[in-house]
Image 1 (cartoon, rainbow, N blue to C red):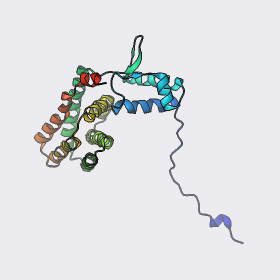
Image 2: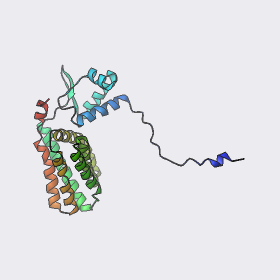
Image 3: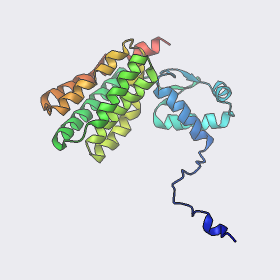
Image 4: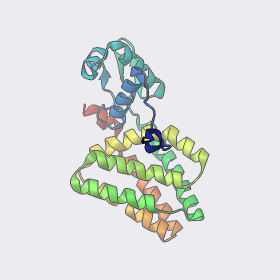
Length: 231
């Protein structure tokens, strides 16, 4: 008689991702946060619970709870007698964001040059941006742009720098998305990044820091008032 037990191979250890039981309010908050950070929900846009509940096919309760989460994130604000809206960006907030981003990224470039960290990830993101720009794929361009700068900070291998970057990240993401959405030449946006990587590869510290500073200062031309007035 065939030994069926012996014929059946033993189950091999395999990592299977667990099913996530994410509360509805968190799912809704994640969806709305993505809309805000991508620039699709622009600064100043009113958030009406009934309309959002209908769009997302949920009740008003998780919408209300999600909006509270976003208010705690600093992305939403309450206007007396009017309700909730996506928090507008002020000129001061934009200026402070890009100036702090410059400090972070110059520090990252300095540490990358000192450590000789591998640049493969940065090259990859440059290629992704170029492909997205040629295809006219705005969303893919923004994602690759974001990944480039996150990788730049990660390669610095500095935990406190990364933690501070994450705190600043949401506003950087939102400002970059709003600015790039109004920029017609996607290939020009993509083309700003390879020279930075080349300077790092050449170990040209002066040029690398000059390029990253110039790149981060592009945000200085962003007009938050114009974005709100265009609604």
